[in-house]
Amino acid sequence: MFKFFENLVDPFKASAKARPPDDSVFRFIAYFAGQARYVFLAVLVLGGLQAWIEISLFGFIGTVVDMLDGANAQTVFSEHWGTFA
Image (tube, rainbow, N blue to C red; front, side, top):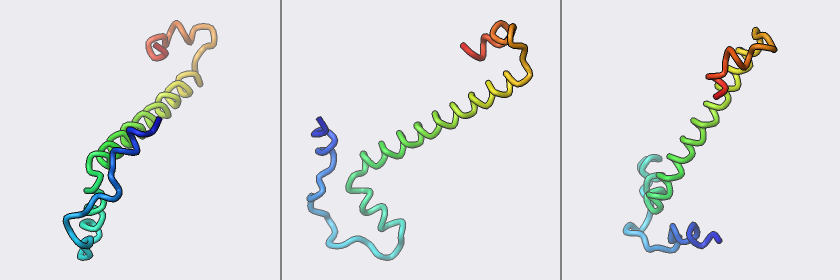
């Protein structure tokens, strides 16, 4: 079931350099992230998208709570149907 994901990165692939760079932290991280460049990029993009969706949902829930705070219970759906749609 997970064979596709397990084969995305070869952990035993020979590296072009004998050892990772030790002159800066960024180059050290880039060295290891570069071995799985596309997987690392996909995780960054999908993680950012997931965070954006979660923040949007919390913002929408806050909007609904504020809207319901001062609304009339009998007419709330007829007045704010566009927000709920």
